[in-house]
Length: 256
Ligand SMILES: [Zn+2]
Image 1 (cartoon, rainbow, N blue to C red):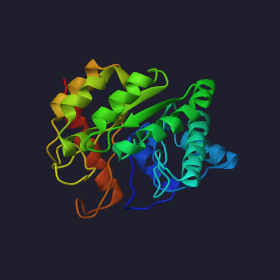
Image 2: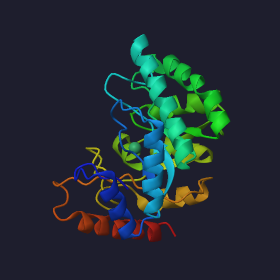
Image 3: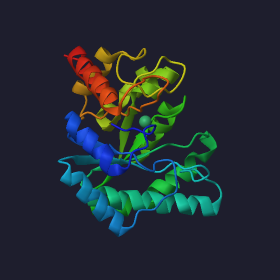
């Protein structure tokens, strides 16, 4: 569970999550900038997570402006690979098992994106970390199918984003990747904007989604990629977390 709008420091966020009863997290901080973590950062973040009784299960890789998986500019591409390697090492240090990558927006950047993935293959194998390619754009099911054809399941898995699937109406095609499912980005919207709100805010079919996850090979705790935005919810962070937790429990019971 993540929260960008309240903009708390890491320690406050972790305390709020732990107090609400959450036990696992998906590291999403800095996903949209070019920040590289130092070895001291690895240690400090790990200690903070542990001291709050939490466990990190996976990490969101970087997708910063101008630094993309399919960047044609050599400098930008090198920076992307450097960031990806950094997050893979961080994921290993923090006890997770997968790093999420966004596929390229343009089909013409596909070959370049494969080059970036190839570049980290040995590092992933050495550290026992997988990549998880996320559905982000309308035709992603085709790009993901190409990745899954090309790369082994233990190297490149799937990050299912329920909100993006709802937005682009390609859930039927994405559900074919259940045997690759490695990371979850669960959230809701009304099919028009990427709202990232708790279950039942919008039009995601939670019964179907939960049932599908249950039938898949996914075995980790569920992750919800929910973001507080004042235009959807007024109130204290604790109230928003409580609202989110109740919605999640309702979604869980919808799947059974
Ligand atoms: Zn996502």
